[in-house]
Length: 57
Image (cartoon, rainbow, N blue to C red; front, side, top):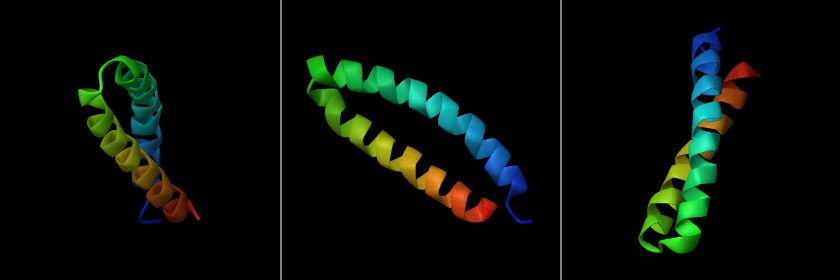
């Protein structure tokens, strides 16, 4: 009950993050300075996804 809004909100964010993450990985393969940023971005994306899943359950 606490989290239906969170779930709906994060699911849209995750869609955007995944698209951004794909671009990020492509850029990271050619620019090493972006790799750290992309790793942090991926961790944030994954943790939001896990929180949203736990919340939905």
